[in-house]
Length: 84
Image 1: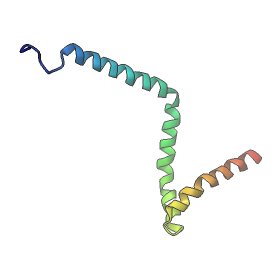
Image 2 (image 1 turned 180 degrees about the horizontal axis):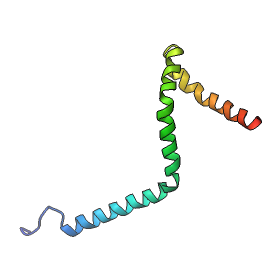
Image 3 (image 1 turned 30 degrees about the vertical axis):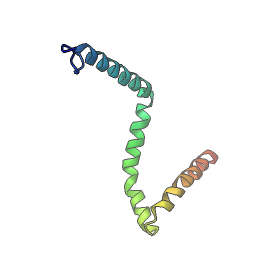
Image 4 (image 1 turned 135 degrees about the horizontal axis):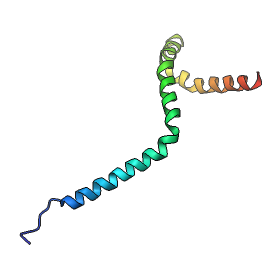
């Protein structure tokens, strides 16, 4: 009983790190097809933030109203593109 240590062995730590690396690699493989979409959405979000801020100020600093109606506006805009 005296020879037992409470610290994990090097093998236990290595196995846990290996499993963690496999899970991270698997997640990256799943997300790889969506990398360009994620990048473009990040670029558009950064580019449109000043417009969003300006519209929110012009509408009386009611960002909740703007958040509720911007998706509706973009939906109408996409429908307009389909019609024209």
